[in-house]
Every structure is written in C-alpha cells, then in structure tokens.
Length: 497
Image 1 (cartoon, rainbow, N blue to C red):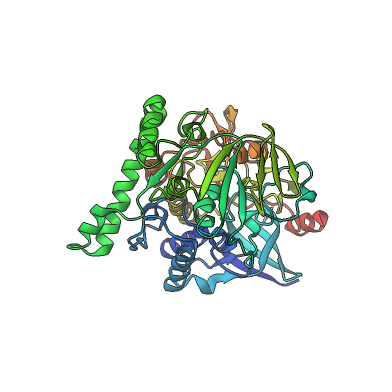
Image 2: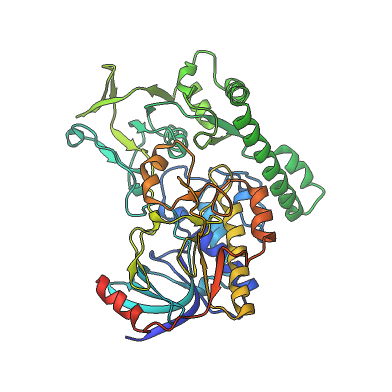
C-alpha cells in the first residue's frame, strides 16, 4: 500500500489544530504539514454542538488566537460566530487547504528504526497510510460520538422528547413546551435562558449547586477605547488585561475561598430578586474546585426573576410518562427532558497506538511539560487550562513543539523522547472535582510531583517554562534511529488488526 510522507501530522481541525497549524507554518516553514480531521467540517466543538444558545464559556479576548485578535465587541461569542472566526482564520492563513476531511485516525505505530510514525487512517471506509516524523494530537479530550448519560429509572416510559445537547435535533420544536434540563454546568446554564425565550417554562434540575457568575456581554471601557484607538489595539489590551484579572481572581478565590464565596454571592444577589431561594446557588465545594460558570449579562438570573425558569435541587427517583419524580416526592411535568449531564472524557482511546511493536496505554504514562508523553517519541498532545481560556495554553504548546522540531534539525537527531530516570511520584493529572473529570481520571495520563512532569495550571509560569526553557534539559532526550528491523512498523500495524 502506498504511504504518503508528511513531516508533521496534526490530528483534529478544531481550535487547537488550526492554531497549531499556524505556528508550524510560521516557525517550521520547510516542513510539510497536514491536519487529519475525522469529521467533514472544521471547528471541532463549535461545529459539533448545535443546541440553542451555544457560546463560549471563556472571554473571547483570551479564547481567541493571539495572532488573530478577537475584534468583536461581544466578550462571549455564539457558536455561529466562533465557527465563522475559525473558518476565517483557516482561510486567511492557507490552513484550510491542508485539512484532510473525513480522515479518521485509527492506528499509530512508531518505529525507532526509521524514526517515523505510521498513521493508519479510515477515509470513508477505505484505509490510507501516512508516515510522519512528528504527530500532534489536537483532537480534544472528550468523546465526540456520545456524551455522558447516566442511567435513569424508567427512562423508556417518558412519552415526550428526551434529548442530550451533544445530539440536539435541529427540528426540535420547544415553543410553548414544559422543559426540564438535568444538570448545572456550562451547558445547562446556557440552555435554560435560551429555551425559556420560547418555552412555557424551563426547570433546571441539579443534584448540587454550581458557582455561577454574570459577565457583561460588552465591556463599557473597551467600547470607550474603541472611539479613539484601532480595534486591534483595544483587543490586544483586553487580552492582556483579562489574563491578568482572571489570574488575580483565581488566586484570590483559591487562597481566600470564604471571601471568594462572599464576592460571588454579592454579585449574584445584585441581579437575583430577594424572593429567590439562594440555597440553589450555594455549592458545598470551594470556588474553583470546579470550573466557574459564566453567564452573559446575568441572563439565567433574569429568566428566573421573570418566572420563565426556576431551579430545583434534588435527586431523580424515576422518569415518568409525563416528567420526572424526585426523591422528595415532587413531580416535575415535562414535554421535553434535556440531559445536560456532561461530557465523556476520552483521550486518544479510539486510536490503537504502538511504540516499536508494544501497545501503548497512555494512562500509564506521565505528561512531560503537559505536552509530551513519557517514553513516547515524537508525539505531543494539546490540553488547555481548566482555570483559564483553553487557547492560552494551546498556543504555548504549539510554539514549544515548533522549538522541539527545529532543535531536532539543529542537532541532527530525529527522535525526541522524555525519559523519567528519577522514579518521579505520579499524581492525577487534573485537580477539579467535576463529575466528568472524576469519571475519567484513571483513563488519562498522569502528572508528576515535580517539574517538568507537573502541571500547575498557571499561564504566567508556563510562558516562562515553555518559551524560555532549554529544550535539551537531559530529561527530553534526542536520539538517532536504531538498527532495528525497519519492518517493525508494518508488523505492528498488521498485528493490531
């Protein structure tokens, strides 16, 4: 079978993949590049999710790319605007032509003899083979085929529509309907006020409360600056300011959680009317033990104030023919039930990976600088921040990968592999208590107790470590191809079938 050689392969044409392609084109201009995208469109999350009101849950001045400032006046972007922004970015920078759509990566096999990855791809049911020096996974961290769906007693008895936001029916008519949204995360707090605009009533049913903060859709000070300054200057200032402010708020709330809680309560109560029971907004955990939910212009609070929506904090006893019966005995009538119960984390689990013939189990490995995998050559992953905009980290990762590729050329060593020779203590990679994180912890790579194996979730520190750190630090080792049988790659693929 013919094998097409490409210097660098990016898996996934979403936010991270498009950003990585930009940096690789700019900093490694002599290297051939392709993005393998399993779906038929770019955009990843922002093309997949189509539920009412879908939007960013990070401010766009930091969620947008540094090389293409977000110049829209709105701080939070609708899914449609975000997808348009990504398409525009790819088109402007010649990235779109490098995307191979409907190319689903199914197997990766590394050969130290040839210093290459063999990449087996499913293209509309047919197999295509690529070879590459470096593979960068930008495919996200959750299962695109299905979201997390807990078992609900008597679910099949429900006579109405039962919907998961990840598979929202575009023809779903929810006007003048009673709707129950199960969940309290970013998806739920986005859905409720948007559904309430047409529905008779919407109830957000949560097992436990979440911290929710209102964010102005437009910043008055930035709008003032736009009267005198070019919009790109304003956007760059907003990015710098928002990074700084978000970091200060996060550090303040994690260091002084009681004060952080009081600050969030105060801001919320300035919008919510006094008759609303605040127990539904009082989590048992500390601020930032889970990701903070942002709502534009307090839209969820305003929908509750207007009586178009409400919140119930209870557990489900069973699904009935016409709604949900709660453990308390209360019954919630519903024509439509939306199960906004979260994501199913999955990192490269659908891809069969071998290294010199041995099957790789990523969860057994540690992340090196939050990017490379221990003992795995020439393979990187993009995993953004949980306490800040994803893109801030993804761009640092892309720049660092470019430095590695260029360093390999400089020292004439086509293999780079991080090796732990100190038996570093292993820890779970993510420190959030969110359900979707806890369900997946054992299935994703670990972090170490010390640098460079540790993840600090700190943009300021990462900028210094990834932009200024010496590439050849003794832990990241650079090698020449071995004298192994060059057929090991082909045999590894055939054995995995």
